[in-house]
Length: 108
Image (cartoon, rainbow, N blue to C red; front, side, top):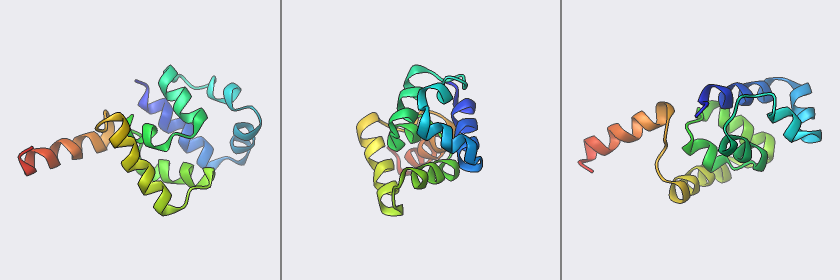
């Protein structure tokens, strides 16, 4: 997985109006400029916030992407929960570590 590239894309999209415009106008061409896996590219193109979260994206970056897509805060939180329910536990990044720690503390 290329988590760095996912997060770089989210960072660029969150901060650069030109990237935002390109995302709206030519999403596939923009995403092709990042070294993403097919699953990452598809999730970003589809706006699948839950899967992007499960893939390990940082929540601070992801919440701005969700807002860019028009999701409210409650919808964003529900998308994260639905992503875990649909795709399983977070696979990488800081949230994978906190999930593992939470499970160990809870004795799961």
